[in-house]
Length: 279
Image (cartoon, rainbow, N blue to C red):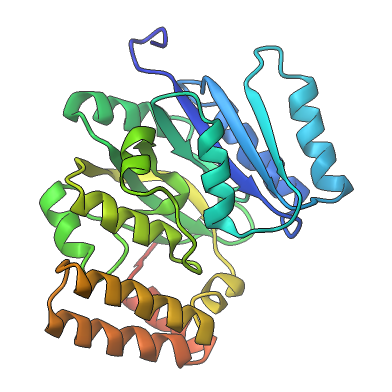
């Protein structure tokens, strides 16, 4: 237990060569400065990183008097799902806090989540994110997610009910559900559906707990043939297991297909009006 009686946790982060060294430094620092500090920090290098990113990691590791850092280096880029699976194996604590390499966590993020985990015996929790452009003073929108188990279950039949960059979960529950599996850009949603179907206790913190970078690339990644195929695979899995009915499958297939083929500028507009709250 930590000094305030909350359980220890590991941070799980994956980084690849396309990341900015400054972004990585900010992301790692925001987790090291938590009001409840992590007991372990696992960084998965998803393929060779390059000198700038390696320098940032070396700086943190070389000044790590507590021995928090475990760096897992993969010889080639394997994608987020496989990288996180490799990193999860290295996590030694019961609870794991996910963090992306370009976002900035609120300093009380993990304390809020651990409080809820302990109070309600949760196995998966996330929270709201503030999307920003440039720096955190320029918040452009907020992505809210449903708070209660019942709301999350219903919401998950239509959209991803958790913000992946700020989830915290019980490692054993993730492994029991099959862990992260390779599904292009949907490895997290696929995992949450399996965890919920497996009976996991879930919730969300009903307030912002993370700043998430927003740019044109974020909306571009949510389109294209590969992403559309991935969406159909997930929906077909949900239909075949009875998670959604046939009419839900038909409706969501049509919606996801349209979103995957429209121009990025229109996709951004649709997401901002339907799935985001303006700041």
